[in-house]
Image (cartoon, rainbow, N blue to C red; front, top):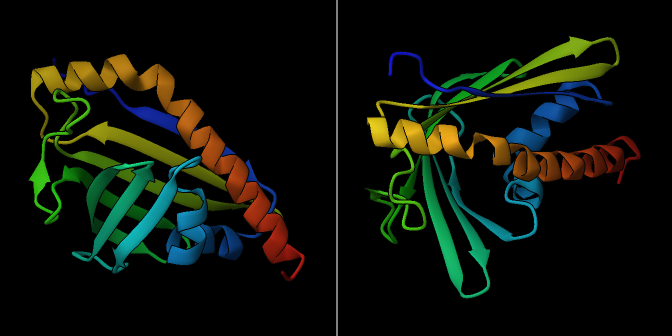
Length: 166
């Protein structure tokens, strides 16, 4: 397979770019929307190239741990990270719920002014993946929008609060 599957989600938010950027880069705001309908705990968030984001999503008694290493950070313009599932010591492992899921997924998020609004584009692509991992990612792509979409609805709520001065 020569072409990697790429999930792209475009969204315009009704808020200035500085506020939208905050929802992606301030751990207390990020934890509110990232992983909607679960408890998200951010154990570490070092927003710089080479910095780590250690994230836990709690679903009842279960936890899904992930480690992201920031590749590129251009304030209010772009964030690029490589994300992997981890064990309890933050070591990269195969996803315990989907063994053929890519060990590393590259995420690129860009932010662009659109008048008083902000256009955000998210791209998700397998990184250094096996054929089985690429096939698993491609087969799951149609479901990605529901999770990201639910998170984006929460971002809308956060942005309304921030603009109202709450």
